[in-house]
Image (tube, rainbow, N blue to C red; front, side, top):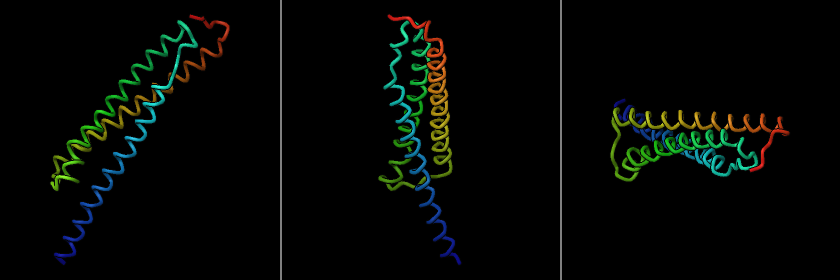
Length: 135
């Protein structure tokens, strides 16, 4: 019975590692996609009216940067030591890792909201097409 419990404990540790890697990978891919969306966006076609879009783009870009920074800290402080250093994680490290992933997710959501606001603003500007200024 004791060996069965220890085997289950080993499987639990492996599963936790797998879930952390999976979550980190999904967040990194999604955050990178949103970052590319901000980087590739051009607001110059709106002239002076595009200043609001640039402000939204800058704030959203900062949210993406914070999310990527949290993911990098998770990689450096949790994943790499456990996978390549042979260390075992304790509860405090797991809580810290969960906080970093949570922070990354929150700022990713903020960035997506700002990207949505950019699209909505551009839609409003395109509806008032006669007011477009060329700069």
